[in-house]
Length: 422
Ligand code: SF4
Ligand code: SF4
Image (cartoon, rainbow, N blue to C red; front, side, top):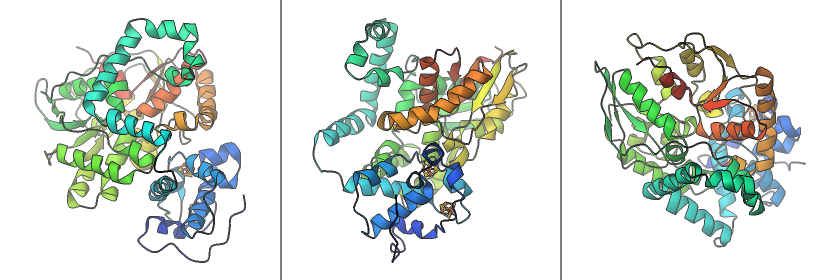
């Protein structure tokens, strides 16, 4: 694709002004998963930045091709990490999604069904709990096995989506307070979010048990909800900010850390101050702590872990590496398990394609990105794969089931808690 020349800069202070920092050096290109796959400049960070700059100047109409190049971006921010000019790619990608949203028709089936899913299900805790109970029953009753075997799911075009469903645990009890066991060392608050509270309840329950065993009271504010990432991803900035404000109000105990168990949610919570301009958002962002980071600094002296003579592969989610910068924590923590062989998944710096709803919105690119990970897993033959983000767990878990590999996919906290000696 040929990029047009750019005569003027987007105005300082506007979301797209960051495009001006790009000096087109190309150092980010080998780090971009979509460029690595396609070798197409338009699928690279440099290409997308030039495209955004051209769109901001009205030098280029927003064609379907241009939109596709922007939509293919995983927001993994590998480019931002290596950019010598400090291009704020995270900000640019948010601005790109907001820009795309302004070009969509204001009505239509797509927008209505999206509004139902996002505004009436995912962001409404009671609806989400009902969906969670229904899905749990669907799996436990045998209906899932029956429908998968019948081929009806594929006939109705939902086979691939349904295949991403992990084995669900019963919903978390709706308590707001879980007291420390034994000597009390402190207290924390826990962010449970939306999708993770249904699809990864086992991680949240293991987190509470482990924190209690380490001597921490855990508070789970009932009025919290979705972090806002899903609305941000479709360019609904104001609604995303509304959800962020709900969380700012929910976590009232300002001296306590806010523990996150899904690095995708944690990455956005850590940057609330970039989206909501007030002092509460700054204080909130400073309190956000990934569970791995918290556990790595906790006192484990009074706890014993059972030996696990198994090979455990560790996957580093992009949000843990490029935004939270805590990718070493799971590796260090898991080494506490006697006899466990902890190995890093090769090319951990490359996105697996499980970025939020990406496997549903960009299934072809997501599948291609997953292929290398599955190939490495086949070669390494671990017993367990751990990853600290629910999106990555769903994406890699689906690939593992697809290829018939016998590898359990867990959050590192689940494995640690499972090995606790009681
Ligand atoms: S590394 Fe930074 S400055 Fe260089 S092309 Fe990529 S975004 Fe632009
Ligand atoms: S965020 Fe990731 S996918 Fe998007 S341009 Fe940067 S490196 Fe490429």
